[in-house]
Length: 490
Image 1 (tube, rainbow, N blue to C red):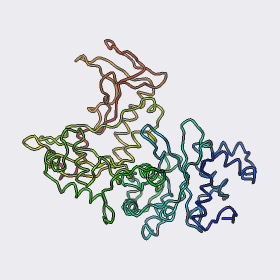
Image 2: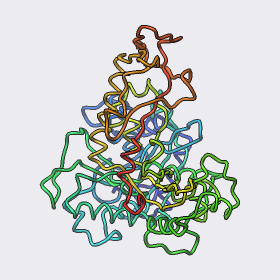
Image 3: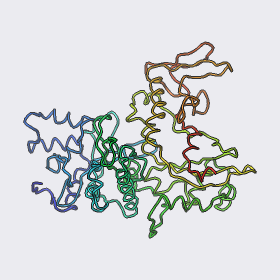
Image 4: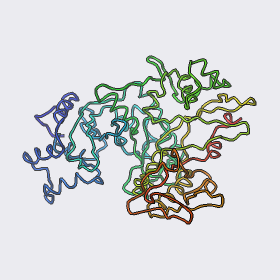
């Protein structure tokens, strides 16, 4: 890196201090200041072309490259070493968004590509290429506003960040899980939901691209190490933004736990065979709340609220499963309502439902009904959907639903029982997933894509054919039952 009088490229604090001078400026103004003072364009590129390139959402570098070139004064590259090698600092420019529920990270933070051949040769996490990139990062945060060019977004936060000690053990375990899967010849089965904070996300210009892996002839999708969206949201809200909201941790200060997931399952299983009423009495909770079983799980983990620090960081979803006396599960597993207009614009590779299943790790807390009709705790299991199931029946159900909604093919008719029925994927036709209502009633509707309407059959009375009853994707109850460990079903 060339010497600069603006900051000391060997000193992390100097780099951070200079970076903080960007706060309050837009990326466009950062570019314009630089363009006046030096030539940052190639011989073939005009000022307008440079701006257009960095505004393009498909451009790999985006505003991150602009910060490298126009603020810190070095040419953007894909070198293996850190961006500021003498200081050991990696620069990461990352967006956040504002939602109805508050601020959150817009996306995962990609750290470095996974080389399947080389990663199995690494001695350990501390000597890995990943840790070289992630141990000290300068995070530059900006607010992404839908419909507005990122060039006009302002830099809001600039801060050096090292994963804290309480996170590092889990990140190391995540790294080891990913490496173990590659060593087992299963790189093609990697999923972001295998792990907690550190993920192995797909990373290529096309979903058809594949890479060789060392212990299998099966080619695997290119993947990169990344901090998950949920973890980055936690970093933003708890380490970056002032007035941070805090959650109670499961692992208390000074406590050493080698395997977080095993610790969680052991804590819950310690109360095996206790009824819901017995546990509620123990913790002083009324048995009326709808989510009583989930609340009891958090109490067993030593957490007073209905969320905890580690689950928030990892994006772990707690799901209660109730097995009836006859060995079946009472409920199918529901997900948030489908937004028809958004669904129509999505592709399978980047859709709301698919991404949720790709990225989410579930904690199943299992209760079983005894002969007297009381539900008793059986234990717990961490689970994520197998890749073959996600890319098989779940994808088929999503695609069928997408095509019906996007192409205006939604049909509503009256069956022999006089009930209104639609042509969306049914449980009887699919072994894993299906679509059915998830609204308050038939009149709880959501708008269909512009220019489409329901095809109304004879005898159907419908007030507005451009809106339909809220539906959601469900995982079938018998499929979930088959995913449970044997000791939880017996």
